[in-house]
Length: 389
Ligand SMILES: [Zn+2]
Image 1 (cartoon, protein in one colour):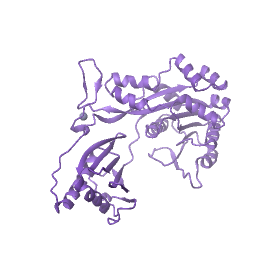
Image 2 (tube, rainbow, N blue to C red):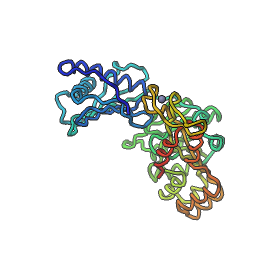
Image 3 (cartoon, protein in one colour):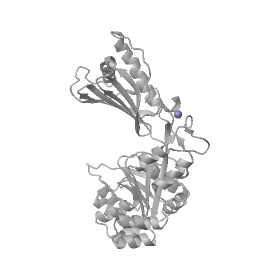
Image 4 (spheres, rainbow, N blue to C red):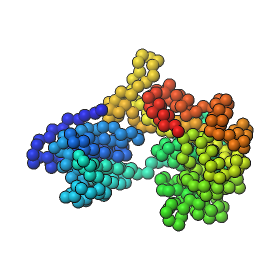
């Protein structure tokens, strides 16, 4: 991918080199908003990779002669035992070294491998601001329907997608929307962990291994007269049961579920022991979403005037061809045919056939609009939608 020449004098200059090289890598990773920096020993060199917009990219390869000193420098910064390279170690890199005030934490983990120590620095940035619902990039088929659901006085809205697909960003935007447009509503969230502060909502930190688990907190919370409830994730049958019950009894409940597609989320509820009639009378909709990387506006190019845009790579995007991410989503509302299918205990295939027959636009079709607008590439869409389970 990208290589960057570094002058490296052999010998005693190397320790000094390592100091400036590490400073430079940390500064560049922060400037690029990388979430992780990997230092991978290969036996031939130390490969430095940045995780940018969720994807690992090679940033540079340092000569083998520097590998040990670079990792040693990281260990010094994190206060680890530099003389022990045979055990895994973890620590924090002090923030006074930080070039930007928006970093809240940097954690170092080192691990011995056959080629030497492998190090990973994870960078934690300050809480991202809560976006407006209109700014998320949801299409005209989804946004008005989602706003109508946000205004409902009862029912369940489920968000699905793998980790890192922007579900908590959407939930935060939804809550903010409710705070602003349905004034006076009592809004409570149960989260593990609380990621963003939402003014106007009561936020509760869940401890899955302590006394405040999702089901215990949710059960007590229902006696606190909430109108809108957000549960970080429905992970177990107990939470699902109480949550669905809440949605049936005058509360609007929003949560996420681990499922690759909307029909899968509905089936998962049934597997958790929720009765089909409870699902059909509580679930308003399932929003399934992913994040695709945006093509870098500085370097994207197309063949001719009408061809699709492709990723190229330039200095602005660290040669990745992409910068930032965009949302793609599909939303399934439980309409009459689908409710009938749930009550008849239809399987995944049957449910998907019903959706298709009713002109449902799936994730890939929604994503295709972004490819046509040159916002993302067909390759990126394939990569993201290839993960559909
Ligand atoms: Zn670029």
